[in-house]
Length: 222
Image (cartoon, rainbow, N blue to C red; front, top):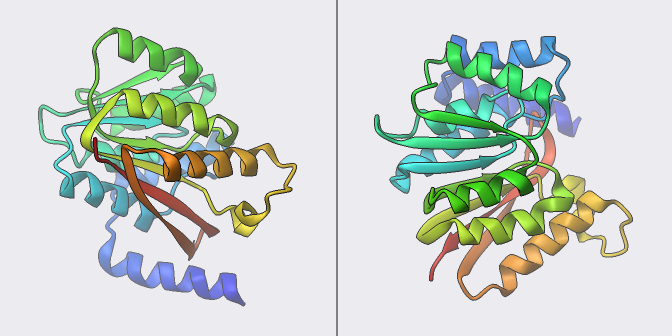
């Protein structure tokens, strides 16, 4: 009953407040057709990312984990005409689908997709002087979240936002004895944020069409 209600509420608000055009709908459809995991953010969560990027005045965005490019489209559309988004994707098939979806959305002028393991491509960004990024969205393999956070801190500035998705994991995040490396990765990630002198943060639980999960939002303060 709970999931049915959560989905109905999402449908109600999405119908009023979140307009998905052909590019967004096509990104989901083509990801499904390519048998990619259905792990993209929900429409209202995509709109939230879009609004956070606009509210923060982001001109440069880093996304770790592209999947089919759905969240990439939401984020890139928040950028000014001369803004830039770099998105990192390890899986070749995901990168192919995302490239086609971003092309259809007309965003190839402001999105650069780098194929490869993020822990290999993040040092490349640093070496190229691509920092600082105004917003970093971390939505990839959870065991690597602690390492992604360290790189996010190297590649941001005071005032930048760091967003970590899928941190609640149906409540499993509260279990310190979990043998799930994804849970342990999220726990370490969150504990690092809590202890870091350059970050102030909060976390929110979410329910909706994607089930029960949540995200961490951290502001780089120094």
